[in-house]
Length: 137
Image (cartoon, rainbow, N blue to C red):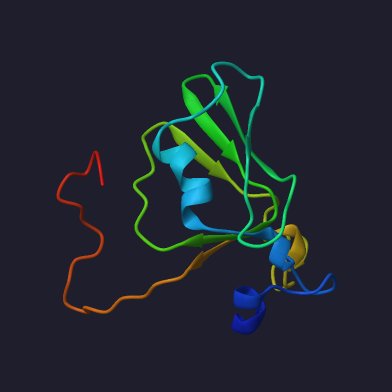
């Protein structure tokens, strides 16, 4: 597994995404939360702002039938709260981490889309998987 320090501080070219590919929660979640997407199969390219430095990475969204498909680039995407994904929304990472030929093979992390929880559970008796309003959180 990728060391936690590597996830939090960025990795070098040989072992994973660099710091230029770490994105804050608001930079990638707002377009999904507000349903920002193309009105057809032509991708809408939503610029992503990295936590540090600069990047030309984009979050792409296309309308596939009645499904909004968000295609994420490689990188680490921070998540600090529960995100209610709107219905008819597809979230797709850069590559599948699974190798059908060798299921025990560790993926090449720099080729993956990783979601990193930046805050943890503090009240172990609270029901965290419930919002007062399951349509809007």
